[in-house]
Image (cartoon, rainbow, N blue to C red; front, side, top):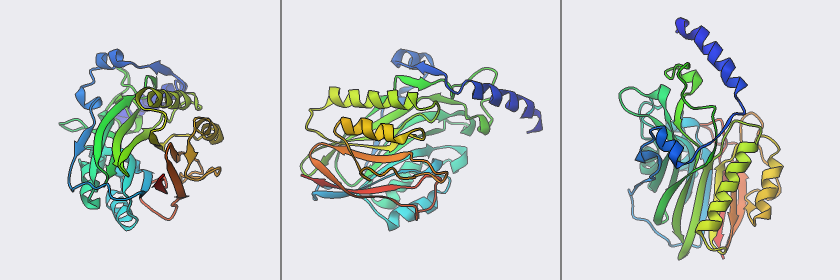
Length: 306
C-alpha cells in the first residue's frame, strides 16, 4: 500500500483539477471504450407471479450505498414494504459486497421481480470476473419491458487513464457512464413508465441538468403526453435543488414532498426525489430518516391511479 501513496496523491490532485471535465458520450464512443451488451441491455428476473390488482401502490426510492450493509437494508425494506422499489448504487459481483448479486438477493428477500441495469464496471472491485454497480427496479407489478438510457452528456472524471492505477479503490476507476433504467409497468390496467435515475455527482450541477434534459426529451419521444410517468432516484441535486424542482414542475411533474425540499443525505443535502406526471396522484410523500443502512435516506410515497 505504501508504494502506491505518492501515485495516489498525484492522481487524486489531478482528478480534482479535472472535476468539471465533460465528455459527450454517444454509442460510437462507448463502443470504442469496449463496452459490451451488458451495458445496453437491462436484465429482468422473475421470482414470483406479478399482479396488477390495485389502484394504489407504495413506492420507495433509495440509494443503498453499494449495499455495504445489505442485510440491514433488506431488513428495513422488509419491515417497510412497498410495491415498487427504485434502488441506486446496487452492486453485482464486487469485492466490497462479497461478490453478491444484490438486486437478485433483495428481490428474493422481498418477494418481487426485478429489472437491473449496469451503470459502471468497477475496475478496482474485480478479481477474476467483471464487477458492476447500477440501478435496480424491484416490483410486484407486471413488467412489460425494460431498457437502458445511457446519457450522452457525461463527466470525464471516472474513466480509466494509463497513469492512474485502476486497482486502487480510492480512485474509483470505472468503465461505463451514468444511466436511467426505464421500466414499463402495468398499473391499474394501464401503462406506468418508471425512470430510475442516478445522475452525475460531479460538476456544479451543469451535467445533472443536461442529463435531466435528456430524460425529458426521451419521455417526449417515446410516450404520448397523457402517459403516467414516475421519475425518481438520486438526482445529485446538491447545488440549488430548488432549480430542479421548478424545472420539473414546469414539465408537469409533482414532487412527493410537494414544495418542501427535504434533506435525504446524512450530510445535509437534498439529493433524492420521487416525481410523477400524468393520470396518477402522489400522496403521503416523506423522507424516512429512521431507516438505516445507507448514507442516503429512502423516500416513500403512495401512487394512486386516477
